[in-house]
Image 1 (cartoon, one colour):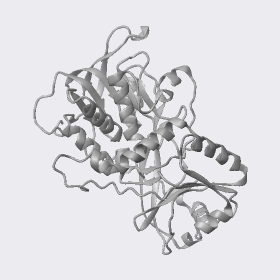
Image 2: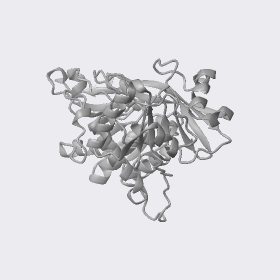
Image 3: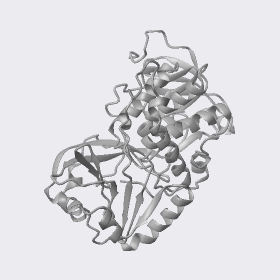
Length: 409
């Protein structure tokens, strides 16, 4: 099962970098590695090359600056510029100008706070402004004037991203990164990593991944191994004796139709827990899950838009009293249960085992910057464009959390 390769050539016995997972993180890492060093041999191993169940295909694909961790704000700032210039950066040779469209639109995110959470919103705003985010605080009167379709009942304060926030075509970004990486020499095969062989000395802090065993029976030696397996990265890390607290957590997205327009509607996050944004002529929405066990079936949980949650939507946006549920889908967050932040970089003991996972729902927007950071760290010894050291595995090994408070859903 290796037909995803652009040729039928035999697999190499050795590669410089083997990446497990060709979703958006694996694709971004491969893109930057091959762009920065075209001489590298990079092999992407993907168990589901159709990506039907991949988080990259099922993401709501939004981008925001409104985080509470400065490194996440930096990743978003890089990400928005990357998206704005993707047609030039990711265009394949010979493609017509404008051929790549990611559908980026920037209406902003709007966080609403009840009186008991006003101070939290103000604290987050201070962090964001200090990091250069273009964010404004709005009173209930300001909100009513700007968004007349919005009820401000029970709202003390809003925080609106004025630029650099919105949504885009995430699957198109993923496919463009992957196509460009392959055009630059990366190879993609359909297979599954089912074992890692490590050198002696792991317990002494000097271990290395020397080869990878695939489900097809192949063994491939590698200089570096990159775990980009998203919701399934925990099991992959365990093959190297690494405890990675990342779990597959299902999230349901509902598609709604509303007979009344909502002019200039941003991505709205309500104190009750739901989020909502436009998607073409529809709206999409979601809320915290009822059942948050690991690795649930990828089927929508229709209970999450029951009468109570419907009433919450209609309370905030009265026009939604007449809404209709068109359909729904479910995807996985690769949730870092330790602190809801990504894990980027090498393991401190298995020194050529690299991680780029655990983004906890904000991976699509951070993939361009995370992929660049990993490539710089691996090739140059340090991530220079964005300092992602706070996201390294070392914090998990030390038991020092770096909590991200603005996790949606």
